[in-house]
Length: 70
Image 1 (cartoon, rainbow, N blue to C red):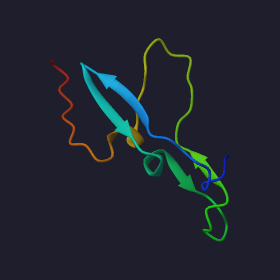
Image 2: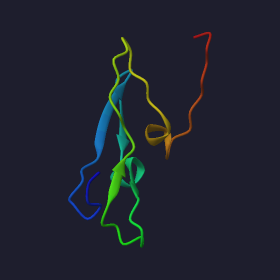
Image 3: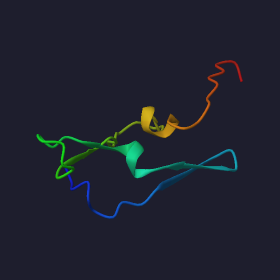
Image 4: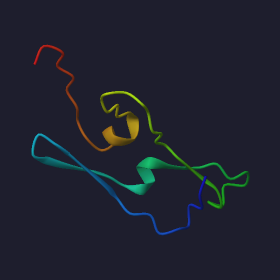
């Protein structure tokens, strides 16, 4: 957990030569009891898989197509 008021930067990921930006408001959620942004939870966790698994925070603000055949 971290303070929402801290200076948080955008995260950048590259997919097929295209940069995708994930803004702090997309990967942080305010969990303060009174909603004053004192305490935030980061919406990302590590894993031990042989692949990357991206969830909802990376898809916000983008139109996505999931094509299982290509």
